[in-house]
Image (tube, rainbow, N blue to C red; front, top):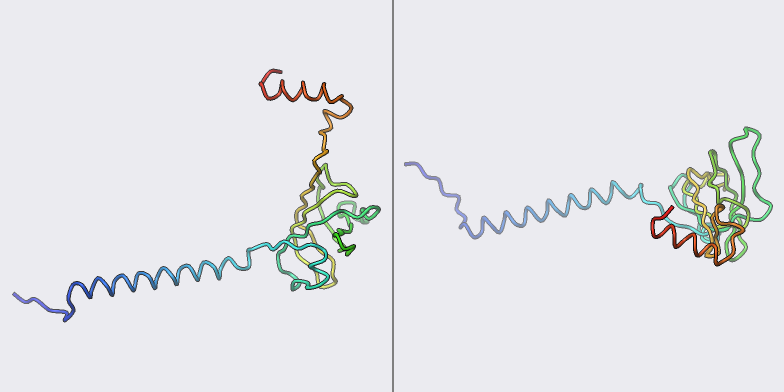
Length: 160
């Protein structure tokens, strides 16, 4: 019989195998993190962009309030332009091409996903409109508190 010896004890072979497996796992994790780094959206307020703007073209989220009197439809009829303000009064111009959410109005909260252009205008790809704790759906507007409470109880109970 021809048996070859590796010169390493089985204990050392297992140790080398474990070390190699750990190195492969660490390398795979680092490759995954490097690949996903450009996919991450970072949240910015208008103050953050004014103080330390992200590089143009980087995917970010801009959050704030829609400035009163700033919403206007551009000449193509589909694109809107508005300004997002923050607590410190900073305002960022934003453009969005598409259908706006129903809750998107002046003075309301908004989160826009997109990229900051080289001209300083934020080019939104999606808009998320936020409402405050006093929000009432259109279907319930004008109802008294008691009537609204009854409608909500019936809805929760599943009765039509």
